[in-house]
Length: 402
Image 1 (cartoon, rainbow, N blue to C red):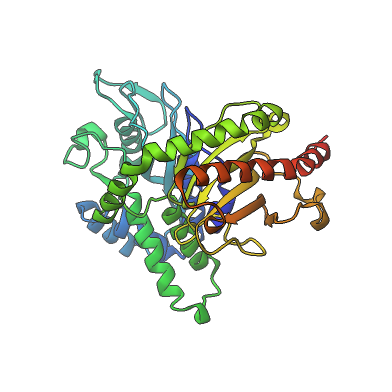
Image 2 (image 1 turned 120 degrees about the vertical axis):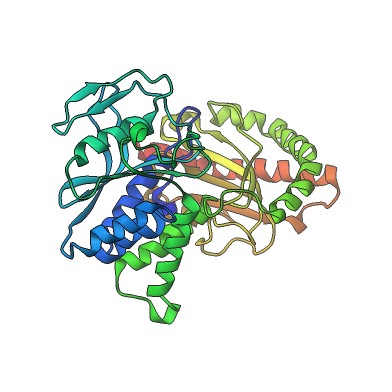
């Protein structure tokens, strides 16, 4: 699990995903750690790749060997809707490039305004289809007016589509002459490439922190399934197999929920959430939030883990079974568990710590009956027994937080 995965501990909420803010802040932190030459190359090689802006940027940088590049996240832009620019590049303290970061959320509609060089708003002719991009681009054009670098606007996206005319020669609409849609898998490829260049082998790791962080950031994007945009033929073949069994998976987990209903009523304050599926975790799982710590995100989760593809819980001691297994986890996606309150002697037999996260219990699938009905029954009873065994630990954790 990458260091960024350890920092990013929160599940998306129904009305908001924390991914965009986290990725913006993480990328800005990484870019500010790079040598100036590497940070300048990122603009041309990634953000403005295959556009006239790339050559213009390279010429601009070549003529100025002492430029100071500084990246800023969540920079508030003064306009009627109090917009916030996800990523802003300052060159010698002056605004030069705006990056709007999207994963899957649509580009927001805006009223059509521009900003003068002094930052004051200027109303322009109404445009019914004005967006964040047109507002930020025109704001940036006002800030760059009269400067050697005219400004650039980039939509950094995973699934979100750009407006149809974005990236075309539409300086009047978007204010700045250089616009481009960049995808997160391009950032992943860049981070992996320069990390590999600086770290050719585990035995020759660079002493530069930024190169190690490039490796970690690329790993995180892989863990979040952001190293590619669209499904591959392998994904399609796997989906065919999965779809044929998805109803049976749902029925199996529903039968487990029936067995766990009493435990949920005793411990949980909310409904079951699954079954859910995690490609990063290699999991089919379900969970409920603990009532006494519901505001802290503490939960019990269980399901089936595929360790060959799972990036979760790889640092347990002793390790989890190397083959497919059933699991039960006590963890948090909010306020961390007070793990220091639980000593080695407090854990029931079979339970092990997930460093920095929580506790896990596992059972290899071959220990359960192989027939469909027997497997579902054995899994339900195994999870129920595991929940009963961990109740004293839950009580001790709750007491530790007062």
